[in-house]
Image (cartoon, rainbow, N blue to C red; front, side, top):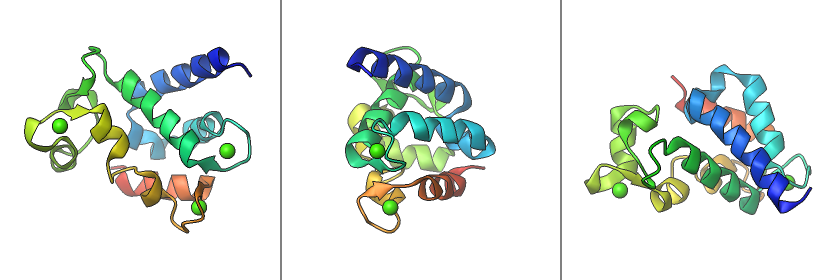
Length: 131
Ligand SMILES: [Ca+2]
Ligand SMILES: [Ca+2]
Ligand SMILES: [Ca+2]
């Protein structure tokens, strides 16, 4: 898979994620599974930190509907409290906050701390944040 195809695949998954909203994935195991297999670029059945970060940046770019490199509350399906926590004082979420946040951070999802995220870890984590 070339880099360009990879980006295209990630982007298309990101767009479907943007439609549903990331936390809403728990309602759609099929979509979550597809997300997992696309982010798992080397098909090792586990998501490394690098794979996770690139997946997350694509999610950010596609959630950012008006393309101003920040996320406003209406661009994310989150509880007001959760959003406030993520956005900080300026009330918008920038890329660094989104990718670096404790919510959905690699370490938080990698429950057994073996440096890889497997599918059960991801689905369990997503389920916690879904309404
Ligand atoms: Ca992998
Ligand atoms: Ca902010
Ligand atoms: Ca793990």
